Amino acid sequence: MQLGLDFTLVEALVAGVDEVGRGPLCGAVVTAAVILDPARPILGLNDSKKLTAARREQLFDEICEKSLSWCIARAEVEEIDQLNILHATMLAMQRAVAGLSVTPRLALIDGNRCPVLDVPSASVVKGDSQVPAIAAASILAKVSRDREMQALDLQYPGYGIAGHKGYPTPAHLEALQRLGPTLIHRRSFAPVRKLLEQL
Image (tube, rainbow, N blue to C red; front, side):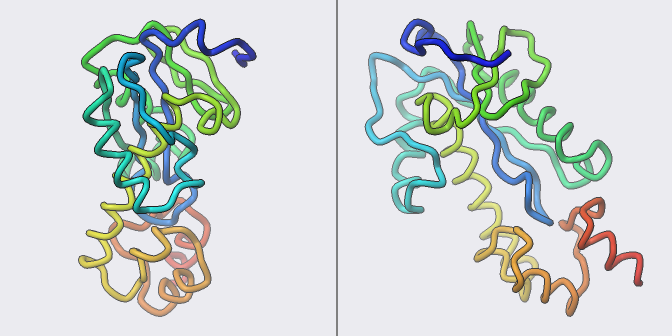
């Protein structure tokens, strides 16, 4: 269901859920679920894309410290290729909510679809800029995935993964053409699939 309600009415034990990494050609899709503590407000929560990397890192630590509960989860490249990116994202969101140490009364999901959960849920379009708990989840997911991309850049040099984070930039597509796909590339995504068909 879509929500157009006053979020202050449901602040207690609301989990915000968001994902990062649906569009990239490589790496996992990473999700997070966060239940904020109304007694310990966090200033400056916003859509992770609107914050600097340094500010996201600061907020990451504050969210982990002050939240009532949080969980970062993922779906791996193999799961993305097997299920498709939408279903893999829903699976990762299910894992994030299931991993919370506190059961939320409501899960608010960024976007226009909800995974099947054991708790009531609602989707919120552009939720990461409207609902603080979703903004917090977007920050945890983004920082977590970016850190993974930095590590993968060292494992797979030459692709520029630390810079483009796996997204299909001209530099990434050129490196793919030159070096070929790796184990972390999503074989079901068209640019990777087409290259593999040529081999």
